[in-house]
Amino acid sequence: MHKVFIDGQAGTTGLEILSRLGGRRDIELLTIPEGLRKDPACRRSCYGSADVVILCLPDDAAREAAELAPGTRLIDASTAHRVADGWVYGMPELDPGTREAIRDAGCVSNPGCYPTGFILCVRPLIDAGILARDVPLRVNAVSGYSGGGKALIARYEANDGADWRVRPYGLHLGHKHVPEMQRYSGTRAAPLFAPMVGHFFKGILTQVPLFRAELRPGTTPEDVHGVLEARYAEEPFVRVLPLGAEDAQADGFLGATACNDTNRIELMVFGSDEHFLLCARYDNLGKGASGAAVQNLNLMLGIEETAGLAA
Image 1: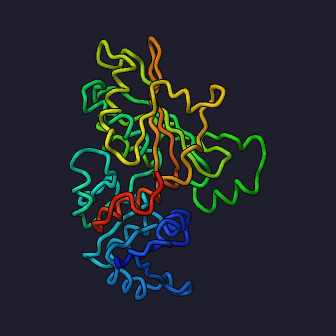
Image 2: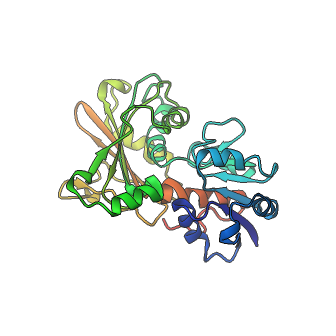
Image 3: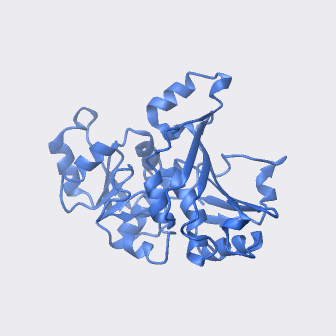
């Protein structure tokens, strides 16, 4: 039995991780009584007993927790360490060496929900030389309101007004996910990121629009699709849908929730004479958060990577 402690298990991500680990016979979940869950001595004891600790805490608390028990293997689900030195970025599909790095890591930073789709769409094109590193990129995305945690969930569930259906935010253009997007996609410029929250609980669509002139001369939609298809052919959780993704649409509309309750991410390519559109669809609480954490946990413990995860 591998011992795992989730620090912050009462939060949205923590509860989702618990739901994925609760029935596992190869995992023993360490717990603290509700009244003592913030007690430093109790937490330190769990840290010392666990094979891996998963941090589901606000950023500042995650930074403090990382100092609580030096030597403890950690997965941090917050934003605190995603571009920090000494932390392995927990996206197994990123490049050929990342899985091994996660397996051997002492500290793994779990990817953010929005960056997951953006990076998996863009990185292969940059690596293949189809998309130059210095092309400024734009990212449009809409997520279910669960991505905002318990406070936002409560606000949305109490308000069913039409003006809450889709709401742009991050209008200061300094969203905390941007540094992560830039570093791991390989682009030299910080992308222009325009996020929105929709009036649905979970699910996410991330879109990257491109002009033909921004790609290598002569590049076709088939070329872009072929690069993604080849890159992810052996990945258990990444599905590259047929060019144009007609079967993924309903009357010409693309929904955000088709991958909910799975660890699957669907990548799509749309194209015309002058424009390309890359799109990723996934569960913001699955592959965008807790599912990714369990995938990383499996690797760190030497367990089959797909254990406990639905594709």
